[in-house]
Length: 182
Image (cartoon, rainbow, N blue to C red):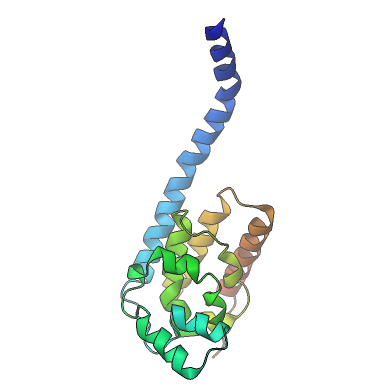
């Protein structure tokens, strides 16, 4: 009788498992392609004079110039891939306070963390509006952002997150069609 129950449970779950296998087979290629596009497009990007991750948090906290400078001193400036995941998760509100240089530098780190499933917050909201924040992105970098949005739109998302992802994707596609004004 125990065996019968196991067969019954297995029989009931097979369609779900097959569906999950199909979804999982599709997803990794899109995620892997998006990650490769992000790494290629943002290779060699440095922070320059842009706002750093901890510095952005200091801006959010209305910190003094001295505190802001101290925060900036500890920020990664040369290799976005070296930014610790814990810092990305700890400073989940920082993208709202990044300037164009800061966004160009931190954007790939956030996207890769999200694609890997390691970012614990919603990132797509920071990709909506604020076109000046993305003014320094090259066409290759813009394409990588679009690939990221397409890849995460295919993942299992909360409805509110899915809505932000779809709206962000729509804005990125629309902006690609529109000429950039100088």
